[in-house]
Length: 42
Image (cartoon, rainbow, N blue to C red; front, side, top):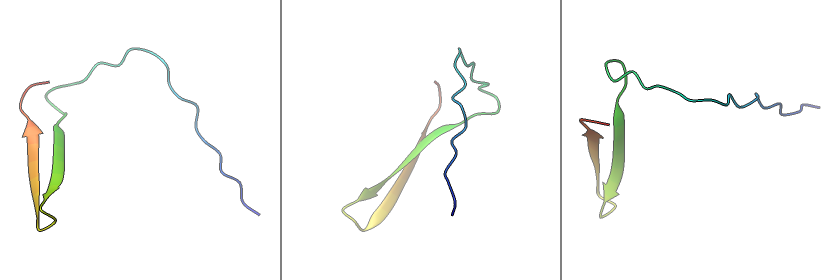
């Protein structure tokens, strides 16, 4: 028998390092192609 154990959630304020981070997305367009994009500033 196996059990699922979840890690505790780290609470606090997180800072994003913009030099080593990216924010991107992908969506399907008309179920035919995938469109990818990213945010230049965040």
